[in-house]
Image (cartoon, rainbow, N blue to C red; front, side, top):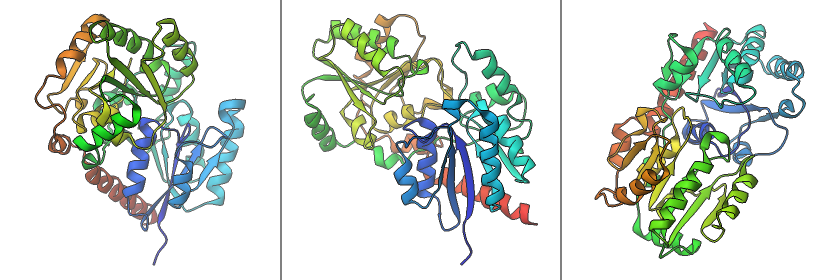
Length: 370
């Protein structure tokens, strides 16, 4: 039996994020006798998915780029990996800020297939914004193939260049609403009798947690028994906790950290609030709808995320309007029902995405050998 081809994925780290969830969903379900995943990350510390990656037969190459900011040292590490592992015929890059250097190094090492993948339709406008935009412009110079998680994400990063959309698919059946699961999770979290607002996302400027807290504050004025559950971690977590204290909502906001049972946590929510400043897709928006949980989200999400009737987009302006919509949308008859068919018909079925990527990898490797 021949060995599986090995794909080297390059990204910041294998934390509990949207890009990482997509990769792991695919990795768990791809035929690992044919295709194996390995990962090169920018951080030296262990992350959320690392143990699972190792259990599935994958390798993780750690670097210290995010701490020492030495891109030359990072390139040297990548060059060593590629020279010592000539079986890597495909390098799949998910980090645009260092993408140019990764793809250039891969090209110099003779890697025939070099993928640049776009996962966002904007970037944070911080002090490094101009540098990020420059790195985005040169991202694709040494790429052979371009992928994006949505049309908006592709157009944002690649402009008029041709790219393929690879949907951030999920196992919809895993998220299907189940009343018994809902009762159990709410009991375990001590929120059986509460109106539960939920959010999933890293504590990062992109996710707009401060706006979320202001929306929840408005909901509390109308629904005294409301609780907010926040899933995730990140650099702004302590800042958000301080804001919760300022609003005197310590007893009403539950920080759950990262969870591996999100299919169950969605069941506990009455409404999912997602006020992101931008999203390449926003896989959690698909997961929430798959669970029958209505979602109120920002108009910065791409149109592909609207796959059910329990979905409402709003501009990031009036928090009172958001609160009213959160209380109104839960009245929909489709809330907490089986919406699996909608997810599959919208193209977010995991099996089709896995098959598409697997066949792509195998075909590309076959061509590279000919």
